[in-house]
Length: 274
Ligand code: NDP
Image 1 (tube, protein in one colour):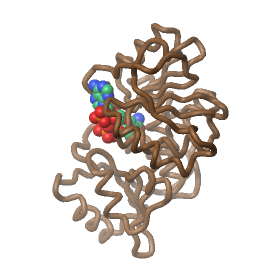
Image 2: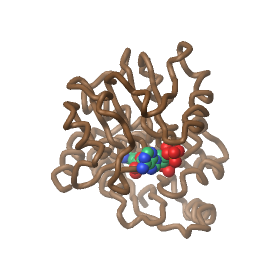
Image 3: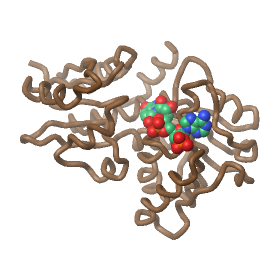
């Protein structure tokens, strides 16, 4: 029988992960099955235990269970511990090991797919929720000049700065500012707020963008978000979160199977469908 994997969420019907993993499996010649699993809102832990009893090898975790998955894991990889959230579980030797590939997926999309190296760059991170928190360590690993975090609730951004001070290469490499304080353009601007989900945008000023800016929205959909439209109208190159989705899946596949699949073909295929 194939090794079994799945993605757990609620709702889950919209998830594109099964198509992505099927494509990776066929490309790498790995014999796996991968399905959607709907967990009751109060039944995540029970669902995971059921999967383990049925011999599953691992699972991706999506909204709203990423924090609960971090609590349920018996062991956390460093990047998942720092993110405080888990999107990838592997079940091995009686342990539930939690990892987080969202941040590495975003960074892979920026560096490999968009061709924008992060070394020495100034990065503006909008938002300080789970997705923002998960991306800070993977960006720091590429030695940016600065990561500046702007969040609606200032205290949450300040807490992230304090949390990541120990991972920074120099004091001030990670800092926070108010949206109104943004007065100069950044090399990379990442929208990690959930504003795009309600077709709105964070109050980022036009000064954040120039012709040399890559503006990336973590959300994806069939049309550019208000953030992407605004950034493009001020000269930036824009990108949605579809590449991040495919790359986080590739990272998870590599954790489970020991081989990292190519992502260009499936990304192009998904873009032509959306
Ligand atoms: P959270 O709920 O944890 O955080 C939401 C963040 O958005 C907070 O910082 C919040 O600020 C801010 N925010 C919400 N609405 C507004 C607004 N109108 N204006 C300004 N700021 C706002 O969400 P997540 O971090 O889990 O997700 C963020 C986004 O990332 C979502 O769009 C999600 O779909 C996307 N995502 C994409 C992935 C992919 O694979 N492409 C993977 C993971 C996430 P405050 O603190 O003030 O409330």
